[in-house]
Amino acid sequence: MLTLIIGFDPKSSTALSKCMITGAAGSTVYYNLRLRHPTLDMPLIDYDLALLFQPMLMLGISIGVAFNVMFADWMVTILLIILFI
Image (cartoon, rainbow, N blue to C red; front, top):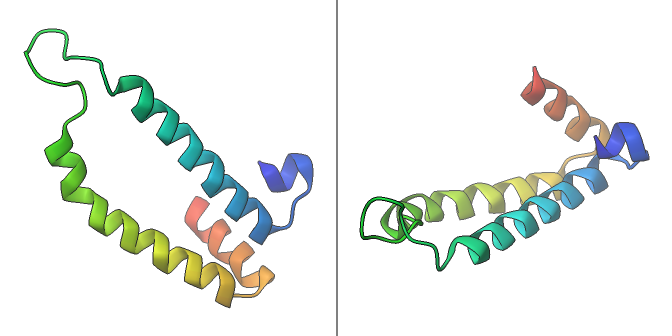
C-alpha cells in the first residue's frame, strides 16, 4: 500500500511497514499488559506462548533485514509479488 498509494520504492516501503507493525504491536502489548482474562484468574497475555515463538520470530526478522539489504530493488519487488500471490 505504501508503494501503490504514496509512491515509495519497494525497499523503503518494506522497512517503513516493519516499523509501523512494530509500533502497533508495542502499543497493543502496552495496552493489554495489565488486563486480566475475563473468566480465568490469569493475565490476558500468555507469556509462555510468547517466549515459545519469540526466538524464531527474531531469527526471521534478522534474515529478512539481511536479505532486504542484499537484494536489488527489482528482486525485492518480485519476492513481494510471489509472497502476495
